[in-house]
Amino acid sequence: MMDFTDFPVIDHHCHVLDPAKTKLDPESLAREFHHGMADIPKPGVKKAKLWDATDELRYHFPNMGVVQTMICQLSKVLDCPPELEAVASERNRRTSESFAAYAQLLYKDAGINTTVVDSDLPKNDPLFNLMPGKILRLFQMGPPIKKLLSQSGSYQELLRDYQETLDRSVKQDGFIGVKAHLAEEVGFGADLVSEAEAKAIFPAAKAGDSGAYKKLYVAVFTATLLQCQELRVPVHLHSGFTGGLWEGPISNADPFLLAPLLRRPEFLKTKIVLLHAGYPWTKQAGQLAHAFPHVWVDMSQISPWGSLRIVECYRDVMAWAPLSKITIGSGGHGTPEIAWLSAKTAKIALGEVLGDAVRLGLMAPKHAEKAGRMILHDNAARMYGLK
Ligand SMILES: [Zn+2]
Image 1 (tube, rainbow, N blue to C red):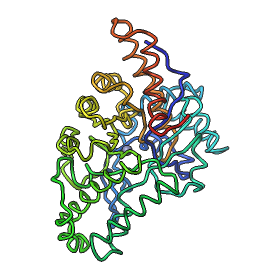
Image 2 (cartoon, helix red, strand yellow; image 1 turned 135 degrees about the vertical axis):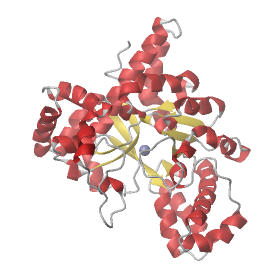
Image 3 (spheres, rainbow, N blue to C red; image 1 turned 180 degrees about the horizontal axis):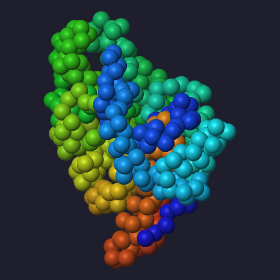
Image 4 (cartoon, helix red, strand yellow; image 1 turned 180 degrees about the vertical axis):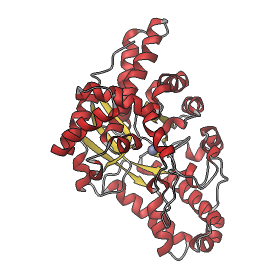
């Protein structure tokens, strides 16, 4: 096994921290890692995460593998027994003094110095003060489309205003890429939508027809792919299971379904990052990054959520993707433990996979070490021109 403990990390996919998570009872801390539905719907509340959970469901939260990994790792940093109650209590003692200082402790422990945040908040939003290190932001495709749909009278008007917003966001406000939810909104493998068709379905989309909205989303998405070439920024795409509640069939998130789109010559110069490494279709994500010049893979959500299968997942992607096209991320949100645990588990996985490569004579030690450094930090730094 190689040791990457002290290597710097760029968390290439994360969300903002939430001051409401300053104090979390043990069960709530465990529940932060639950990426699914609760089972007692609240009348009038759509978001299933805001629903209540029965005792039966609550029983399972602390028994998720990722929560066990958090307890194991956090007990070492906080110097307390490896029990959920003990780590939660020590965590809360520290966060009650300063949530920001606690986040700093964890980010320093994991070596995270930069984060790409999936957020449309303005650069100087106070929420960013909680997150240690340098912050880069992603332009979110969904919110401006929804806003402009209600304001615009035609598809041309919507597209023009959307493109102006994106242009300004990158050139003036410093956004470093675009985040799209093609899988969740439409599904990978959907047919392309011509401009004529987008114009024709616009009134229905505006009136709330979900099929028409999907077509509109595809039309704006392909326009975004082309605009991002000009702007020289990547498009980040959730791939595989994302934990959300889906509009479309969840099985339409296999990265292989993107191949017909990726193969089109007009999109070959748009950098596309497959977030969440397409899990459970990790091998497919790796093979796309191998075959297509413009496809990259980000290991977020696998680290930390797939902690008990983390080594195999990294192996799946690293088997095929050029090692210079893999980044690590977390998919963290709310609490700093998620991003921290992602970096810790990524280092464990890389230590095993690259350590094995050296042991088996598949890689020279110095190249294995360099590959680890690239995946943890340098590949993302190169993508955004960071020092
Ligand atoms: Zn994500």
